[in-house]
Length: 475
Image 1 (cartoon, rainbow, N blue to C red):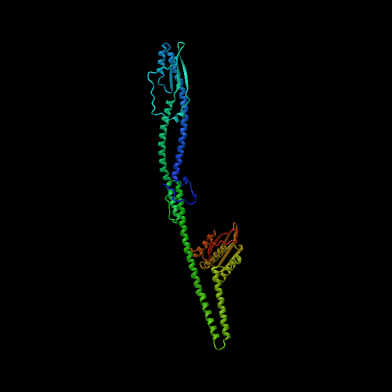
Image 2: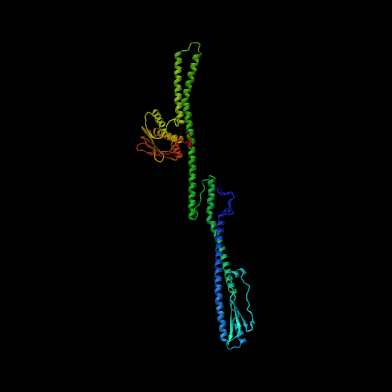
């Protein structure tokens, strides 16, 4: 059975009505009960109208039959004495249904009956029912004429109580039968509604589990086709949420690994590159100090040599620092147009990888598409070229980037290397590219180019290109 929640669910009014607080099964039962009561009222109205019409017709027929009976009795008893005729007529009309016949003599006195009719009153209908059913009372007087002389009068009055009693008994029996049927139907509906609505309670419990981030919730398919569809969709959503959580967990772990790798590589470069340079600077500085502190005049040639060595080392440190900063964050992005940044990137790769020919075509690009989009384009091209050199051992790498219709950037990186190996595994670099492109609503496809590898990237961009919506952290 579905019970009313202890607190108002989200989206409810602060003060919901009493009807809204009732359980669904109770509301459905109340609706059925209201329909049943309305049907009962309509049935009572139809019974009253039909009974009123039937009683009216019955009274007219009874009145006509009694008039015919009185006339026949008078015609058959023409030879009898007036007293005998009146008594005979009184006996014949005694106990008739629907009418009461009063026999009056010539003086207007009522001719008494031998024994009055006894009426059973234990099932008398209520007055309101009689008032609804009973037609207007009709009265008709027939003169009693014997041999051309009037000896009395037969006064005929309609009496619908017998017919009304029968209608009341029928109505009571029908009402009791209808009440029993309605009670049985309500009980059956109460049980049926409980079974039908039970899966909704399971859905509510399952949604509560999802709200608590328990994505292991699953619903058993109920017998109802419609509810089975809801259960199937719920299970699909729960499965998708579970897979999304697992994917997020993997991405978080990869992000942490990438950060650790970047820190490790930065620390190693600082140790291997900056350390010797700083040591050489320290040694040359110490040599200059010793020369300056000597008693004899310093050797100008040696001082010049030391100064040149210090200048050379400082130049190396500046180059290393520039390369390191550019790897952490391209300093030109946002300062110069995006195509120029990509040209500088290709020049840097040509300088560092002299055995590979790098070419690019960026004429179809705008000057910029926002900080996040520009950084994503730069990093994806950088990572694709790095993979082509490191894993594909390519001799030529071609990069193309341009705008297409419907505000889309299309980037293609081709190489003539060894292509994608059958046992290829997605590394951190490719995962980072997919994450960046996916965050902008784009797609990334990696395929064999026969020969080599082709990376196709599509990134949509908005109408406000200069807007910076920093959704992706710098790497």
